[in-house]
Length: 177
Image 1: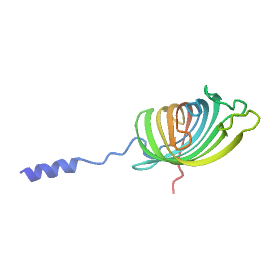
Image 2: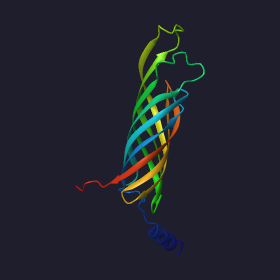
Image 3: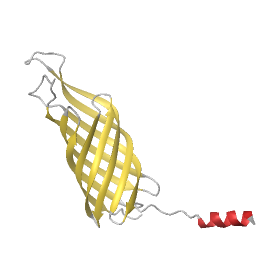
Image 4: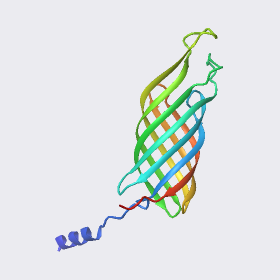
C-alpha cells in the first residue's frame, strides 16, 4: 500500500517549465557606479533563456564622473570597459520578471597613475584584468518592449564596483531550427 502511494506521488510530480523558457531580450541602460568614486555607466546586454539556465553577454563602459577627494589627476578621466559572459536563472509572472546571473569577464581599465605627484608629468596606463560580473534584474515587459532596474557589479583586481542602471528592454524571438 505504501509503495503504491509513493509511486502515485512520484507520478504526479511533473516537471514544470520556467515562465522565462524561450524568452530572450536585450537591455540598453544608463546609470551610476562606484567605480573611481562615482562614474556614469553605459551597458548593453543580450540574454537567451534556455530550458534550465540563461546565458547573458554584456558589454559595459564606465567613465569617471566625479573625482574622489584624493584624486591628483583631475584633468584626465579614468575609464573601464567590460566584456562579460554570465549564467543565471529567473522567475516570471505575467509581465513582471526577476533575473539573476553571474559569470566571468575581462576588464580593460584606462587610468592615471597617481604615484607621481607632479601635475605635468603623469602616466596614463592601460591595464587588463579578469573579473566576476554579476547582476540582478527586476523588469516589466509588455509583449516586446519594457523597462528594468539592473543592479550590477564586477569584482576584479583593479577597480571592483557596484552600480544601478535603468534599462530599456526589447524582447525578440529566436529562429526555429
